[in-house]
Amino acid sequence: LKVVATPGIDDHQIPSEKFETKGRLASVCSRIVLKILFFARVARPDLLSSVNMLAREVTRWTAACDDRLFRLISYINCTKDWVMKCHVGDEPKHLRLACYADASFAGDLRDSKSTSGGLLCLIGPHTFVPLSWLCKKQTAVSHSSTEAEIIALEAAMRMEALPMLNLWSQVHDTIAPRND
Image (cartoon, rainbow, N blue to C red; front, side):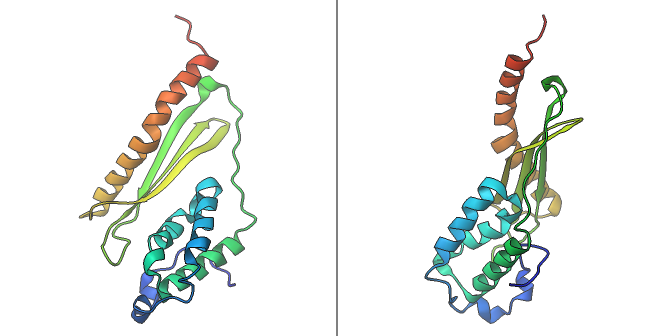
């Protein structure tokens, strides 16, 4: 395995003939990819984009997918000591939910669709707790990076932030009831 800085590889760096050739790992790719997908969903959101791309390819696995998987495994090997940490040092009245969203623009070479990403955290002056994250391919082609970003924000708000906001308000009211 080699030392790499990112989990993904730019498709422009892969020779075009590799997208036509069946991959050597085609018979076992689903087992490998699904194990990494579980790992990413539980504790490593930095892997989600790359592993989601591979998961969409298991039925049509190519030599390019072999290269992408090798890159992902190399990245996991380089970052095996990384852990997700959180810290809570504030009273509930000082805590807020924060939703961060981002998008790639036309990241998929075949269909030019963007990918949405989002992170929902509980934050305070001395608190940072990642609560949930998402990585999802957009369903339509965006015409600009701004449009892709707005779609990512909408997805993060609808699927993560708004449901958590309802829960957080109930938890907050239970822990720190208001004096009316």
